[in-house]
Length: 95
Image 1: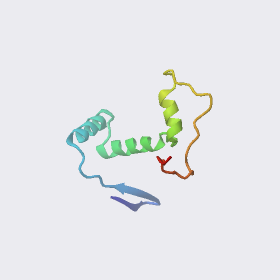
Image 2: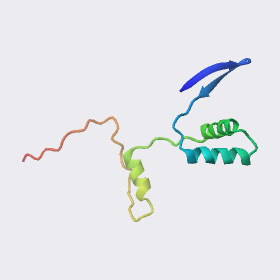
Image 3: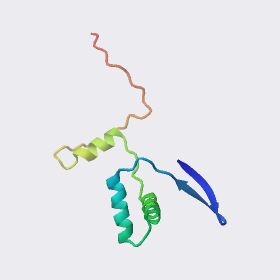
Image 4: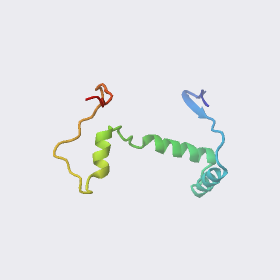
């Protein structure tokens, strides 16, 4: 659940997260204590840092396949063409 409310002049969001595993809760509590913060402040910090991580761009199947097998003896002279936007046609087994 996400809600927004005003804190002074600033509009801030509020999250409610249910069904958190007890082990996760305990780890966050230990981390908060280690960093001298409340659990709420620690979670704010964790969410802020996670939101700043660089997002990995989405790649197509051909690009991902080449990346997966590169360096393992599979080499291509030309890059694999992506199939986005091309109509798929079923294989015909008729002669």
